[in-house]
Length: 508
Ligand code: C2O
Ligand code: CU
Ligand code: CU
Image (tube, rainbow, N blue to C red; front, side, top):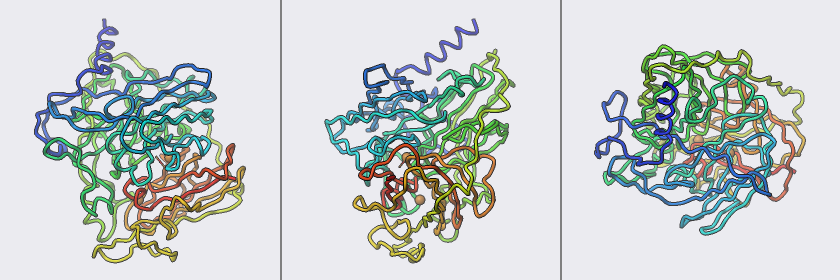
């Protein structure tokens, strides 16, 4: 009986019925504690591909659509195989993958596999343009350990707008090790994706995007949070333990995640890999593009709420100086997900003590260190250049790295295949930038000379670099070389990326 009951719940949550809930058609930002109708958390459909001669085939259609975030109000959105966001792709280490990406929209786009170790030509960066009405067909082998990744538009200068309107989805990657671990892994039942995004709606229900220069300088912040595209979401666990795969799919907002009752949870994954063993904590800071896998115990049967709270002062990530006035948004508190466990939860096994073995890449292995200084110009009477890395400042773009703004015609760095390198990211600005590198997962060596925090010891492809901080990480450039196709490195605040804080490297 219990089983069939929970089954029905799952079917309802997976259902493709109306996205509308009971929320009244009054459009305003929902702040923490505001009473509002709750909607069942949407779970993006799971897409495991279909066997084909080219490998496991994933047909993805990028399309325009309409979504009812608010009951009875249609909002123009973009989606992949749907109206908003895309299906969750499940990949298996070692498998051959064939992606058929069909652009049915009226504008150019690209589709990037964030965090996947793939050939540059299959990476989906700004050069791999998919024109309207055409199909892009990258093929690659999955060559990395289990983790949580995502895919999203990476169109030059348009990434912020296209991701904001919905061109993004989650990727779950399993390997032999992950499939034998005693972890919750039934998708939509006890393995739940949570794609966190903040939006701003106009009075007519349309999505508002960058409207003023501040939206670019601080990155675009919304006043309404969606989880998997659901407004005011509610989730009812049917098992004692639930694994949440958190993805910060926001353009600029950093979340400080916690539960309203301060309950602790176990952090098991940092995106690119598991942690060596579960880390018990009760708060987690997730910057744009970062992922985390957590396991939460609901066996007490009590309701709780996943919230975002003020960014801790001791985190080193708070905006400083005059910029802090512009970014009061980062301290806004929101309810993200109301959680009400069902009665009679199915039991879940204890978490494994060990999740994986992570061999540290020795610093002595590195052939060279490259330094990347992040610069931004405050401009517009906000106090002159905030940069000052000493490099040549590009006056036309507000953001740059080593004094150069992104230029499609310039390859900024050349890396030798087989080398191990240390990259040193220097944040010469007054705000946090999540720095991301394509091609590779890296290990953080230190932050301002101190060893990485316990939540950062796994493999990652995106790292928070706080104002004034210097972060060093190490990585190996293996398997793919291509002098003609570049990988990107950039700030993952999408308005910064779109406005110059990005560069290109080739592996030769
Ligand atoms: Cu998530 Cu260059 O991207
Ligand atoms: Cu990426
Ligand atoms: Cu940035």
